Amino acid sequence: MASALLDRRLLAITGKGGTGKSTITAALALAASRRGKKVLVCEVVANERVANLFGKPASGTEIRLLLPNLYSVHVRPREAMREYALMILKYETLYKLAFENAAARYFLSAAPSLAEIVMLGKVWWHATQEEERGKPRWDLVILDAPATGHGLTFLTVPEVFLQLVQDGPLARDMRDMQSLLGNPDTCRTCIVTLPEEMPANEAIELHKALKAHSLPQGPLFLNGCFEPRFTPQERVAVARGGPALAAAGEAADNHEARADLSSLYASVLGKSVDLPLIKIPFLFDRVFNAQAIEKVAGIIEGAL
Image 1 (tube, rainbow, N blue to C red):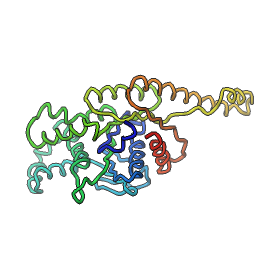
Image 2: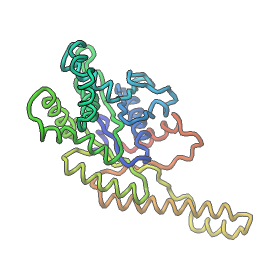
Image 3: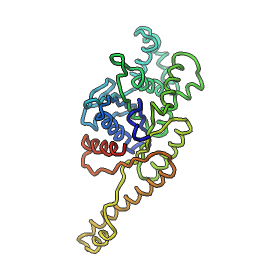
């Protein structure tokens, strides 16, 4: 499963907020682009981060080149609504009549999950419909999805919509989106977590929820892992150094305690989640930038 991860049409990256979703998204995109794939990163969260991780200005709603073969775009509801509506209505005048009068704006702002529908629709369009010279424009689209609860809502929008509406162009597109998200050959959803109690528990529950909705999953990314660095004998030797080495001894103990936690939660997740586990080590870089993403991409490439 892991080895063919980058051969999908769409990868959706989700997990508890603060676990490093954008970092893993950027690293996967870099790894795929270095394999010669033309990659588009779609960010749907409020503040885009991926361009900044590569030292580039925010992409905004226009597709921007970040690195060779690697592009990004910030998918926002208002702009996505306009693009999607124009695809259906074809004409700018009809769009303005239908969507830009006050009554329509009020209705659309109150419609449940409409923002998720149009944003997911734009991601789906990039992944399956957009062409360049008669061929798919992108080899891989990576979605930096919302965090856990909202992420699940986002990815299950087509399923919920089709329980209410069966006919019309929107229902047709929802079926196509659901088909894409539910096909293990074209799409995988990857969870990112940390070796800590709350993120690990949320990852386990999210894994169960995605499974219940028949959404195929890729490997689980355990971010921020500590590896043991000191033998028991080395720790004793530092402790015998007296007050002069007290700070060094405490630092060594703290590091090993974090390494023990990393090992514990890797074991817990391994027993609870039937997916390959990819460990991403904690990086002690003073500035988290493109060089750090290069390191993470290298680790992922090695694991894949």
